[in-house]
Image (tube, rainbow, N blue to C red):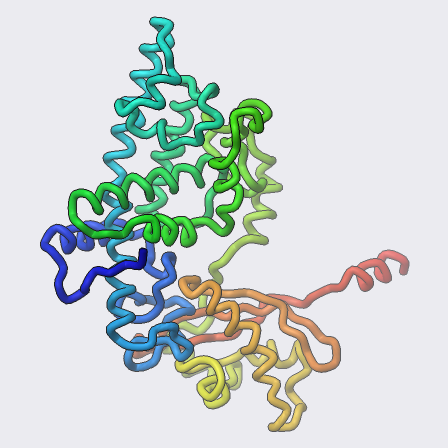
Length: 382
């Protein structure tokens, strides 16, 4: 069922949920697929695409009313997550105490998990109930606390399957709570929207919930990190992480933020000296609505300096960037490989920043040359 709340007729309880959600500063509304409007502020790529009315040129909103409904929906989802945090964390500790007591007395843990007295553990996949000991649930409680902190400090990705499952527990408990207590009517659609926003791929999570007890194949490896760059609490992953050198290399490869080289008043100086080339007229006709400039170093590396004016080399730089900004609107920078017309390649980065008037600007900066594997082999042979 679709979200049917009238944004002009919200109950005081619903408004309180929305206001409470603002406390989760680590959750940007773009995470839930909302683009446009006053909530999208700061130096981020998505802001560069907004027009004077706060909308994207390719906005999915057919009217201001539709955009307002979507804004209320995502604000409500953020509020539901905020409400869920004390409920889930208090509940998991009650479950741990109950399971530990049953372990000591020889009671039936499975009956507790399936009963109405279970607080959180009953939301975990039923196929793995034989593995839900107090020690196992304690590890999951650590994950819940980490995810709750990520909601406040800034969400990146789920580091383990347990982190994905924790998001689901917060989403389900939060949506059901505010629906029952505040009449928000977010329902299953709201839970699905949260999961889609937080997880790149929820297919594994869905498969686990559809598994039978005979399909599990042993204790779940919920706490193993997905990739070597993910730092996981040693209590969760006692096997340890890669060496510091490996982590530094991986983090360098995965970095998403590059500083602006010409912030504030330095931008005008760079434009006058020729360090930066203004391509705003072309960008505004096809891609971005804010001022856009590219470093002369980029043009030299890609062989664009001597091309005729109608060569439209700007399209080579902006086309890839446009799709990257649409996919990651909240990023402050986006790095990619740009091709030249004669086979040249260069690592470049687009950085969202502000000029001396604190207005949004976009700068395309040079990162380095691209060395093909064939060139490496030739160098070794010589």
